[in-house]
Length: 567
Image 1 (cartoon, one colour):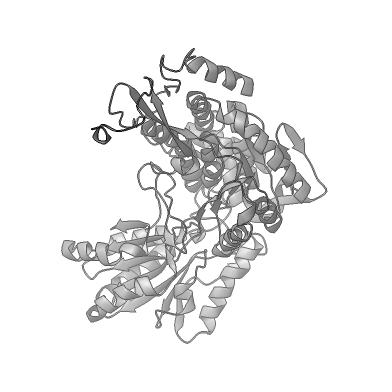
Image 2 (cartoon, rainbow, N blue to C red):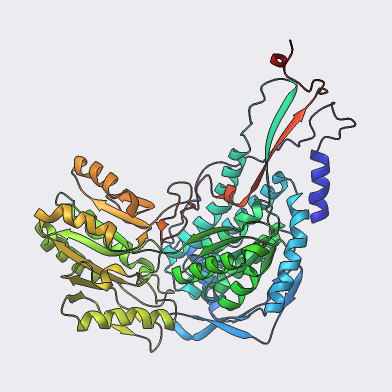
């Protein structure tokens, strides 16, 4: 495959006999890529997509898929055998996989570094053709395999899986390609016909480490394959609790034509992976989604090893938040209720953008409370193969323990009152009922710390204290990922947009704080929420390029001095 890429490179390059005959810089001619989102299928009773998905769900649930490490063209198994289970039925194993050892991570680094130079020479046109093929395979042939693996392995409802492992994943491949094609249109100023200035995007010298989370299958595909699109080689450490769906992405991309060694699939214990990649002189970047402590540790390790590296590594991270809904007295109650229920409790509040804290004026509290509680009662939690459920289980035992710990804290605190939910049971699966809590103290830890579960805490403020309460949004947490305001007062909305400017990288007006779409709302936050590099936006792919400016002069240089120097 790499030989094919090399031949395409030679074909696209102009062979120049002498220095002044013409440009030696290849002119890219990328394939057509429309800027449009993948349609989301409905899965209504009797639909073709529902029948196909149910068939694949039955097949996948009845077996335990073996998933090897893949380094270059070698599939590897180690003695460090692990299992991925269904969160909603934790006795059911769906994937058997293997952790990499430090020696294998080092081997993957060696393979990746070697593959990078040859892959980078593959013209962007050829790379984009592979990405389009991968997206088409995801859209048609393997759509329901991606969805089933996400539903069973990450306990997502059918619609949450379809949005994630089908539509968003496909969008990352196609729309990211569109943005790259658009960037290639830029032509630097060439002030005379005797000079040609060009800018090209190279891959980065070394390798990129991609560390992906459990909560979005699409994020795994983006973190690993967008750097690869730009000419980089990648070590991809998938989440242990998203192993099966991520394996399907890797297999699909391999079938589409991504050459061996370009992306290496290396499940691994987190600290082992982090210690090994940050000690390599060839580390050129880390693409990360996960917790603040883990990202901080990686960043500190890079700083500690800074003198070792051939290049300054690029660090891109998205680390979660304590996302808010702020309700103005003029807000539409039904919009507040529906938006908050969806944001706080879809996928059990395990979206980076999920609403976890809410500020409501006294004047609306009674109506909003009634709406939230009556809607919460209708939410069915259970096995994701039951298409009538609203949400499945939380991801694993550690998450169950953490989230239930906050609920127990609420039961014991005099400042907190559980007004809805509060039940949890892990006998079959890691089930936690959607829980609504009120607080007298807006700085209580349940109102300020990231929980990452189906727990919503509400502070009811006096209408006369609107200004003071707005300040709490910014000062009570270190995060700044997503936030939403609800209002029918246009002047206040304009004011809130400015005063809350630094509280969220994604800001919503009269809509829920979740649901960013590739190409529509590029996603990312600042402060302790991350580096705000905006995945799904026009500049994200360029973060993984090393631009090179080229000046070609087509006439001989004759004079060493300047006219004003001559008498």
